[in-house]
Length: 126
Image 1: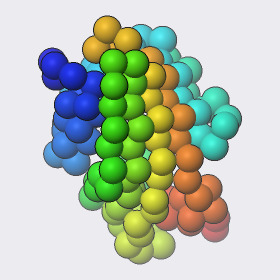
Image 2 (image 1 turned 90 degrees about the horizontal axis):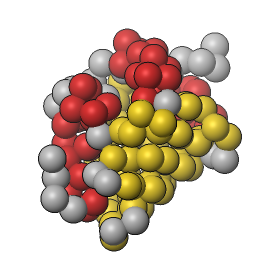
Image 3 (image 1 turned 135 degrees about the vertical axis):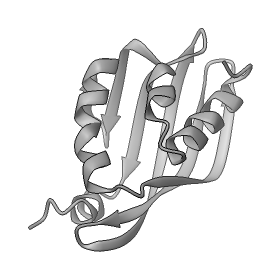
């Protein structure tokens, strides 16, 4: 387990890029909550895993590129790019994420990005 919140967030992206999805989900608290542009979209680690299956099936070459990463004892913030190839071709979407971390587990995440570009990348605007 990573020794700092900075290392935890960095390792989460590195393992996600390696498609080691189980490692990434093990970093989430059981009662994890995720918000997208202010709306609660995932409520619990199991819910997150289930909701993300569409993404993994649609964007098989998904990866994240970290542009900035900050963390302290309470959580962290990351400016990164969601990159991959979806039904409409290659895409690169900038994202800002804010994390609350307790006892080495991600408890809550707030993601902010372009919902229209994300829908297009995933083929949901057809």
